[in-house]
Length: 198
Ligand code: SAM
Figure 1 (tube, rainbow, N blue to C red):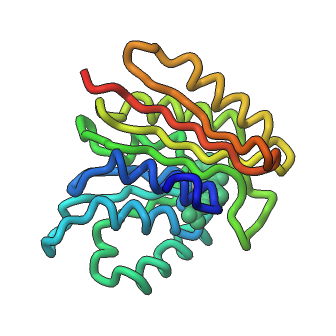
Figure 2: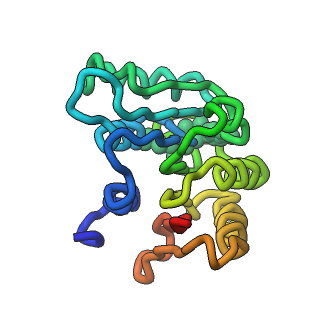
């Protein structure tokens, strides 16, 4: 069940499973070491050899792109071709997602690259631009998923920006909520923004 899982990302993955369908196109806005990309790929792939579904994954760090590529290589082999990796800032996601494409989910896992350079970190300004871009490209029935870490400097401010963004989305079109652990005050906060079907 949902909260039996220890990690915030695992809770997020359970929510994604309810939204993502085989054959979908989804965006990983912060691919890091590729764990989320891999989870998404498994959700969009159908049984055929061709790529029914796709993941577009991006990161500003070349190291992260390489790390994701190597994880996919080791785990999904030829299905790696169903993931497109981009070494860009997520605020530019509209430049890489083809126009008029139906995007089922845009997922953010904010903060720094685990095991990498902790000074390279998501920042409120580009996170907000990327959320706005995600809002524009998301299909009805889609999800913007954000895992926000508050234990590092700037984390709480970034959470405020994410929460303000979700709070401002029109109530007729969006269902926005957050999951916060009351007895683990430094645990990551999950923010989900579901775009209603028309
Ligand atoms: N999802 C990853 C995984 O499963 O391993 C973990 C992501 S890690 C917490 C955050 C990542 O965001 C880092 O790899 C960092 O380089 C990346 N990042 C920071 N600023 C970014 C930006 N403006 N655009 C895209 N990625 C960014």
